[in-house]
Image (tube, rainbow, N blue to C red; front, side):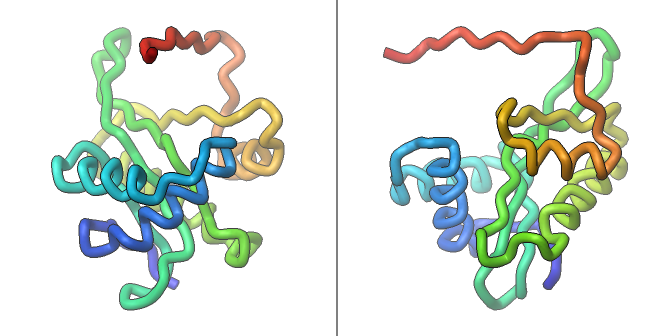
Length: 149
């Protein structure tokens, strides 16, 4: 399997996997919404998506990155916001390969760091991140302010 930068030609596979990813986080299925969201991110160059799988076959997983900045460091940072591998392809090193593609991308851009968040009970993911050299933040808390209806 190859890791490659996905584009709108991969939208059907990406949308299906993105929908599965959201359902993992207990969101309702919404394939049309996922297709619209992913399509807009790719078409508007608002995210970078790496996929893994055969280039002319079904994609097995993806990671979605968002570029941002750290004012304190006056440097670019990259959020590894989504990482998902279909259940039938897990435990084969695919998530690790996607994370390595993200690391390489960040390095090539000259970013200061990559950053991610995961659920506190997602021990499998935490183990993967830590085994890949990621460090858990012990200094800062994350806060959210909901702005929806």
